Length: 256
Image 1 (tube, rainbow, N blue to C red):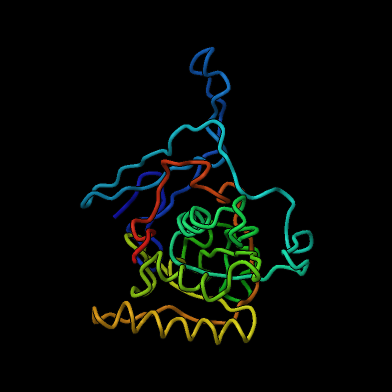
Image 2 (image 1 turned 30 degrees about the vertical axis):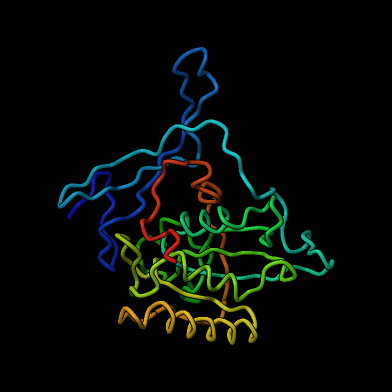
């Protein structure tokens, strides 16, 4: 199946992908809308209807309210106790939706424990350094689209974040999430410390027993040590806050 715009399904056979983007241009529809722009975060998405592919632009959107502050990170953030925050790293399909649902339920300005989020790529081949989004979409680098969370453990514990991660996607599908197909959409927990590995394994067993054993389903989420992290391009950061009508994987909602 071919897709208008020259983007082909990746090596894993994806039938639903984020397509190549076009640099933005100012749009002035009228004097009253002269400030409206097609933001740098607007791209074209493919919607598949049977064997037909339709390209759908995200909505025009003027003034997004973002949660993360520019230039803030581990070296500048502090927790309630004054210590440096901890880092949690999750992959659960398209990173737009993963970031959106975490920030929706743990808003940074409501002091629920999440201090900063960043979407990017991890878990790839050692020689695939600083990959672009377009390269990761080919499926050749083995990177996963992932979310990096900097959080205050005195407010929200790592085990709560792991449980929420399982609650908000489908961890039973291999290299896919909803209609998205490819290794970049795999479900994975990238632990940053031995303690995180133990917690992730324990919570996984608890969630399996409580929520998936009764349905006869098996969690296939990888639990692996975190490796090099590469930030995705700026327009991917908080994408669904910048583009509220943009694509969101249908599995990214509260499952219990």
